[in-house]
Image 1 (cartoon, rainbow, N blue to C red):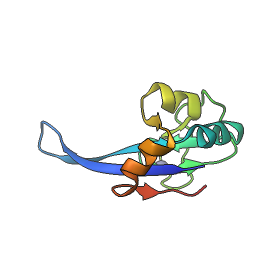
Image 2 (image 1 turned 90 degrees about the horizontal axis):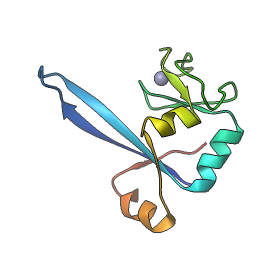
Image 3 (image 1 turned 90 degrees about the vertical axis):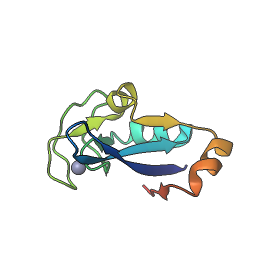
Length: 101
Ligand SMILES: [Zn+2]
């Protein structure tokens, strides 16, 4: 089970900088997170556990407190999670932060 987070800074048209995070994982990790009713916060890119149905929307995040935690099917539809195979994960390993769950 492997999960990586990579972030980049994006400059918005109004000049503000925002950090965009992308989560990449293998299929086993995605299945595990679904089974555990995990959610991903779109504000701080942290995982929350235990109370998210797959279609959960805007639940309170335990890490940052914002109502921005989404169920796994939702984040998948939003394009925030990328499921990659081992070779692809090896390629991004150097530029990403490994997340353990
Ligand atoms: Zn959060």
